[in-house]
Figure 1 (cartoon, rainbow, N blue to C red):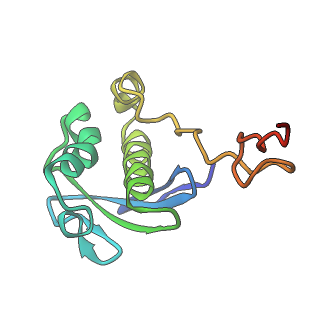
Figure 2: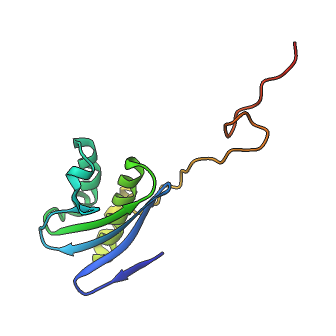
Amino acid sequence: MTRKIKKNWVYAIGRRRTATARVRLFRGGSQHLVNNKPIGEYFPGVANEILWKKPFEVTGTIGKYYVTVRTLGGGKKGQLGAVVHGIARTLNLANEKFRAPLKAEGLLTRDPRTRERRKIGTGGKARRKKQSPKR
């Protein structure tokens, strides 16, 4: 697990499917940025906002920290999951007291579900069987 602790920020990597998010957590109440855009602009919508705010709500740190994120790979949903995972990891590194509530909510666990590879002899899909030539 790649993570560093610096003096003025905490760093961790979050992952989900093929998406990765490199998250830096700073003290203070500045604006959250993802790929140099405000997080609300990069992940628009109320449902997305509820998801990325969840680690801060669970630990009671809304307004005390802000994050800058560099995310790549996957789609928007996978990137959002990676960002949430990264935020939870950085909060855990920032203060060990946050580990229990984050763990209870399942935010420190990486979601292992990925796309299943295609097998030989199937008709183009992972589990599809070829049509029988009988009759």
